[in-house]
Length: 62
Image 1 (cartoon, helix red, strand yellow):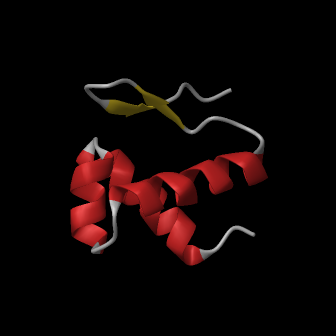
Image 2 (spheres, rainbow, N blue to C red):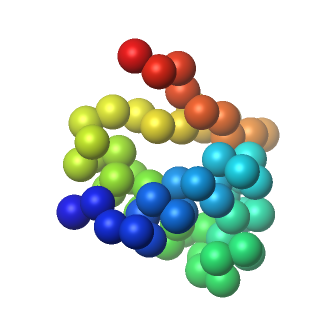
């Protein structure tokens, strides 16, 4: 169920480099944003972002 919101959420996370910054920009909680991204990754069958405790970055294209 890829929808516009999930893709906007992914783009915001990638642009801000953090769930916190993206969540503030989209006016949602970081937790809700994280769940949206997990669902999108599950639907696509691939990991879109590499997450650490300090930053978020795009994964390599395969």
